[in-house]
Image (cartoon, rainbow, N blue to C red; front, side, top):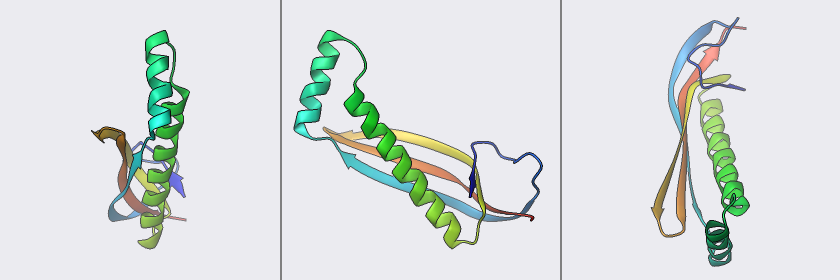
Length: 105
């Protein structure tokens, strides 16, 4: 499955647009992770715990989006956009959206 943020794929012709697909994931961060991240905020530097949680959410949302595209018969997803939101204390939402398409073979 080709997944791209662009609206076209070089050297490929889109045969059919199958619709918008999305993958949504809501993740909770635990108290220990929050505490360690707050220490990092105080002393400076990057928060590896939150970075890994962001990466985990992104990958899960993309996988869910791909699965929905496959169920429509797509072999690619174009125009992919990733959004991240904080819902409330310790909750994060990751959303991947794109257009499922079938490319000519």
